[in-house]
Length: 258
Image (tube, rainbow, N blue to C red):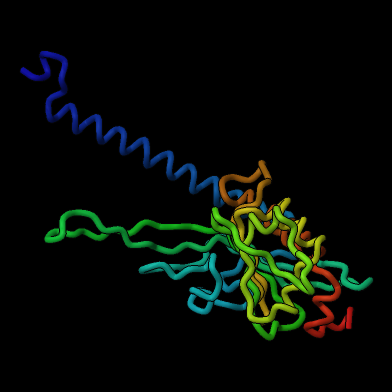
């Protein structure tokens, strides 16, 4: 009777749901296939860049919770679609080659639902684009530059002078145990670069590594999905390194500028 009045009976409803599930499955397979084809195409462009599962020599276990964009989450985590190769940057009039990796980090976050007596836990996968760069010398203490809260904060000062532009101060929070080293890093030129290209993203320097988290504001449209962000992330990483002032490299004892 229900089907007669225009409402589907059980069999019709199940058939419709099965058809929708089949279509969704085909579309998901096509997306995965496009991603894999684009990843292979990206690697074919430049033989210096290779696929890896250990960015800059670090496996997923070593990277988990090491930086903000490589959070371990609440269950599983890992690296996917990672490429590794050289980044060449001019420092102090000399060309320095960095070892760099671009990849997507994934982790699972727990979500609870239901009543107090009948709580159910499910897991949602979160993903973050990451660039990892091996620095020419390790930092004595870490420096973290990340998105600022809505309220902002008071900027760093030296001899009563404001070092950060008001726009930078509104957009970013800087954390570190060595104020002098932070001052040597964040000159006006680097601050402007961060404001123009890295809003909403994180930049962390710790030990021998620099990590950049977040999607670039541009991409390679010839590559599907997040693969199109990998070469763009490498371009941004090279620009960021180019904007790090020589005084910072001298402070950590890098040869070309010492």
